[in-house]
Length: 441
Image (cartoon, rainbow, N blue to C red; front, side):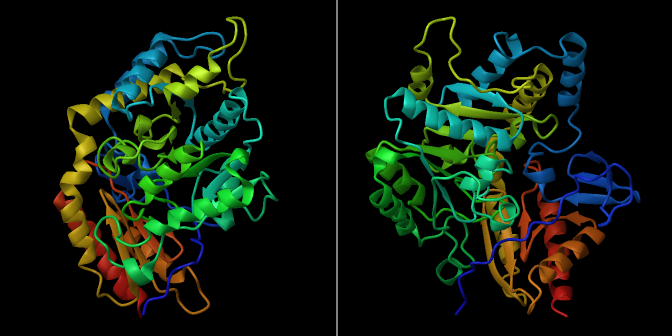
């Protein structure tokens, strides 16, 4: 029997310290990109199996976006977002609201997924205070959840390595159990059958603290950085039922799942569950310009818009919120998504993607393959006393053979651009198969 995986994914160290080129850990250098491929500093093509970092959904080097950016820089390079505005921000917000779940009609622009999460948490707390429920201050996240790297995000997040060096974080945080159960759900194609009852852990948290003290629950519809963990069938619907019953806001972190990754514009649309607040970033501009957006319901928006005209409604914002150049990039990205029908592309390619990956289920040390839309993960048995080593060997082999996949511990994640073709899938699977076999030796 396969054991249920409770190990924390070990994220590869990123490289903020680049003042000179004396690297302690030598980085792999990418120098250009077009379509489905990077080119590295040795001139080799490298198939992008990760859409950059879950963000380049329409593929690399889209001239429509770069030309829109260039035009906007020449016309209006910056406009302050406090007490001022510019037309593109309102146009972009209207376009986004048109593809969002029905009641999420209001947009707050940020600069990243991390900032989107911080914004969503503050809006949730502020909303309850405005409604006269100031005791609702507790927040509920989920084990293995990833919500960025700011203090709010790592507090409600459930990845220990993101938190252990930085102290206690925010107080008043609880966590739901994660939904990965390899014993019952290994090698499931699409959403797993078992685990809806895990949502009922929220009722236990509510019984402990009382609903009158809980502001919001935040989850990724599909946990991405925590290991590509799918929601069991009915799980998200059950969370929605419980939160609505107790007057608790439900926040979906769709930074990864937004803009076509699992099919449809958003996971909430594909899986038929509408949150009160939704965070996005990454695919928002196809990764070209840093930008995030928080979607809120009419009810939440209207609660803040009750004061006199000379008063600030929400004491929160960023210098670059709604940046005109980022808006131009986002509008051009939306044009591509809509013109090329990319929000449905993940559904069109889902069967080919899943069946190709599941063809590796009998390879040595493969304990699970999980997938939905155009995102998947392969989980491997860790080497004795060397967690992450086997996964790193496969990652290294794939890169050296012209395929980039994401390595987090002994989990290999794939989230290719939505423009992927069957031949690209075959190339990816071939490299993975060889790498898994080599890592077995």
